Image (tube, rainbow, N blue to C red; front, side, top):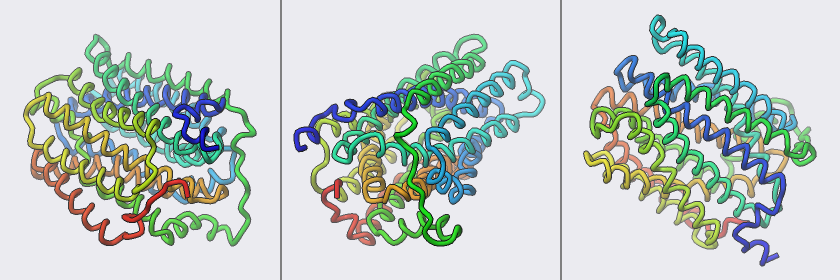
Amino acid sequence: MAKTQAAPFAAFHHRDFCFFQLMRFTGTLGQQMQSVAIGWQVYAITGRAIDLGYVGLVQFLPALSLALVTGHVADLVDRRLILIVQNLILLACAAALYWLTRSQMTASYGVYPIYAVLLVLGTARAFAAPAAQALLPSLVPSQDFSNAVAWSSTTWQVATILGPALGGFIFGWKDGAALVYSAFGALVGLALVSNLLIRRQSFVPKRDDSGTRWQRLLAGVHYVRANQILFGAISLDLFAVLLGGAVALLPVYARDILHVGPLGLGILRSAPSVGAAAMAIFLAFRPLKRRAGKSMLAGVFVFGLATCVFGLSTNFYLSLSMLVIIGAADLISVYVRQTLVQLRTPESMRGRVSAVNQVFIGASNELGEFESGMTANWWGAIPATIIGGLGTLVVVALWAWKFPKLRDADELNV
């Protein structure tokens, strides 16, 4: 067992894990490409940073408002079926974005049709995210799960490296936005095929009939709240990334501060994923065995510090290097949090706990984009980024004090 646990490619010995990663890679690649096109389109239409914030907000609202339902569904319904439905909806969203672009609907109605499509996309992701998170532990033995998390993060990060760069490159062509949305649809179609190749019996959840229906809906919330390590890890990520999210303002930096255009925006969007992928591969070969809590806190501290330097920079290469560091530091937090959440949660509750986790992730990402857009609209992009980074440093200090069990957490596989 020790030999299998130490093997750097242990997770890939399992067939369904491989198809799951192919699904994640192609789907994420397409979504990252379309996110660059949408960000550039929205900012080009309105010229207001706050509208970039609304892009994040409209995608986060479904995850927040449906959190209890999406987690419960993931614990009752075949999790692969949920992911299949998501991919079908994403195909429809790709077609809608293509049609909106080619028909010039935005010239008449502004960004509102785009927001409507993003609301549908966000709803599909709200149901799929807890199902996908709860599915992963069912695809590999528990001794290989940390390795699976590292490689799953690598797959996602490689897609987020390639996606924005490809999206920015294609966007620069004639009818580039329409081409990006076409590629988005094709890649989601490949994700759907990969999803169908996963064996059905791998992830039918065990039914939980304990308590009333309302108690079952709230079980994930209560479980996380009662576990100081889980609550501390999830909430640390929420507030740190909520305050320190500079990615939402990259269209502003690319066009008005660094002057690098759509291709430069794609490269900047890819930079955090370069750092995260490198860190994920490192952790696949050298997994964290001790001091998991302290490693997580240190990673978030570096994340906040690099965000401050990025905010001050007017040099493209310095900004790029800070984004790489931001991605690497954030991956440490993701690795620790994801492993803790899944291995310390009963299988019958993983959907509901994953839904709670997803709300926090969505708040830190999509709601963080809204917060960044709002503060940039008030103070300007540079002050908003610096203040957010400083706020992250304060959060790390507070969490190290308020959550001693998280700070002193040692081994992940408990």
